[in-house]
Image 1 (cartoon, rainbow, N blue to C red):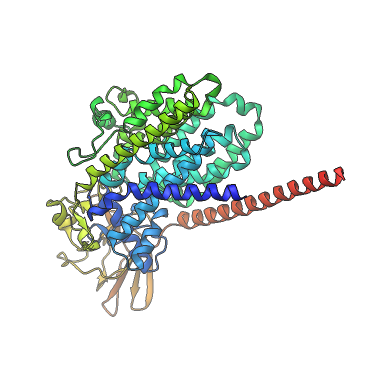
Image 2 (cartoon, one colour):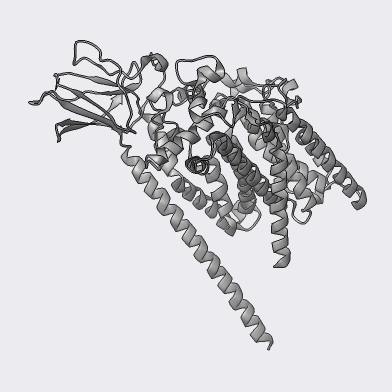
Length: 584
């Protein structure tokens, strides 16, 4: 028990040190605005605003994109953003909140990789597990994601990839009762970064096919995998079902990625794979770094009896994914993978695969014990020096966001970027979740209501209440329509009142020209000459039902797992007692 406690303490302290060293560029007192940095910071801020307004599970960030609203929570999970949103509501600045959140992510990514490396390496752990963590965290792609891209979704995925790999191992080779690794790993990936989740599911499918004989020989494993897959679907349906519902309800810009040849155009030159620069001379580093590219190449020299099927799979899969990011891969034949958006999305799981492959290779090189130990220590020093130099490149690249920067300023694209688009670039990044083919300029459109119920267009009106757009008309003509300054998502409704009396409730629909909320009420004439319209997002029945399904499934699984654990412990204790009594 004491040894187990000391090992756990060592793991935590080591991973904290790894995260602290990795985060030393925070000392430059700024945050770089990368392709996604402001997008995620604004998501955190918008979630904190929603919580303040008692909207605990927001589907739309109503104040984003010039108050038109943006439904990114329905397409891109906010599940792990509650922690930084809570920090914001405690009064911590957006600058410090973002840094605390990133440090927490780096620590947990180190921790899960240490645990995974310990499992994959088996008896040859400790020093080699530490080395594997350094390969995983201290590499230039993770540095680029962390500091330059601001890719919070991928940063979160780095936490769950090692857990998913542990689940892959236990489901095929290890203790099948540890199926919770599959649940936590894959559900965590889905709620972190959709694309990394899909890639990892594909990897797992290939691994299962490779080991199909093992699974067919042990039907219990196969049945458990299928059951866990079903449970995972139900646990996350609170996110996935409403996502699919929204995608089916209209044509959004994210649809444009499917079935195109965009990946061919965005593939890397081979020189980019070997470009390890992290300073300002290189906008984004699209390489997994020298150690992950070179060290697994020595895996073939590992003795046959020391090789494992999982390690072999990880090394091969890692290199294939790196190759797939280049122009030499025939992307034209794989248009069905265009959902990736960029080939470099493959580098996230590739980093996990090659880090474990590199650690396994070093641990099992056919060298004498003394020589291997000296080589490993020398490698540790080289990794540390390389990491410090690469992080120094980030440290000397000051960003635009500093501690005095307010959340309101981070929304101001004209101030930070010195340019403006037809939407708020800092809040939306690429506007994937806006309706496609619309003729509207959100920046210039302003808060005006368009209707054929009056002779002239109304002046822009203020929108001050949270999720409650109220306006009045004297009457409703036959065939009247109203187009609201709100981006349409399925779930918007309109309540129409004559004084305090509810006249009609309507489901809004998408205006085909603008992609805004549109409704067409029945004709009505009010004696008071004041018809009140209240437009708000109520949500859909599927959103409510799927949320309850996920809650009930998760609670049932947790309770069943706990009961099974205690029952197994009770059986073991009983068997030991019987053996002791038998000997007496």
